[in-house]
Length: 339
Image 1 (cartoon, helix red, strand yellow):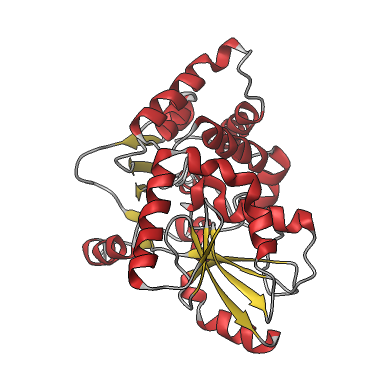
Image 2 (cartoon, one colour):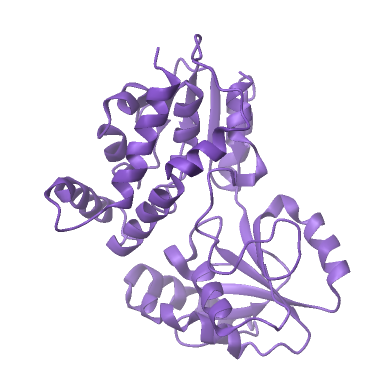
């Protein structure tokens, strides 16, 4: 049985490792080789995006932040550890790492099934620490001999998970997206932050903004201006193919949309949008919008805004959640402690 202080120390060491990445440091040669292999396995995992994900986690796993996160939980040495099956999504680099860290800190063991296109990075991280490796088993076959489940996937996958794992304690996550609420007072820096929230990781994450709520008569060119730093996305084949395909669908379907050569804006009520597209909708007053967002909360991962909306996140911070920012608002650590 591992000791809580040892588990905390291993997680702090991981944070330190991810915070000091350098191509000039020989200890990171295997690290960059893992990134290279991950990109060969998944064309979306560009080196710069992998590094952004690692650096974000390095910041999140600062000792002070770990201490703040766990301070509200009655963590123990856990004399009866459970095995938690974890099914990871693999849409952006290191997605699913928070679930692993929660399992480690709770003193349980993880049985991990990585996404088909994401079997390099997280196993590499785990292999770097003997204690974390001892708490974690990776499998590519059927999940067997576990006590509870944490599974993340598409809406279709979530329906399958609900059926297959219904007899186990579980956390099942489906597709959600971030939304942004603008009021017209945003600065140029805010709009560049919005561009990052939309297009970091090519818009593939559940925390990427896919829907904009705009005041009446808002100038959409301001949104395009904030997106400009990501213009080189179109040089990436997988992104460009999606852009061309979705643009062709809109043209053949007679949809109205605006585009700037690498991104499209379409007025549409649904929250989830295709790659290289954001939906937008105009609002008249903030109070009805707040009610609407509450109605849509099951489809919203987070809200980006300068407004005083409940739980709103600053522009540019969508992909930098803290340890206490739980996906789907489900407190994973409380779930694990309840087993």
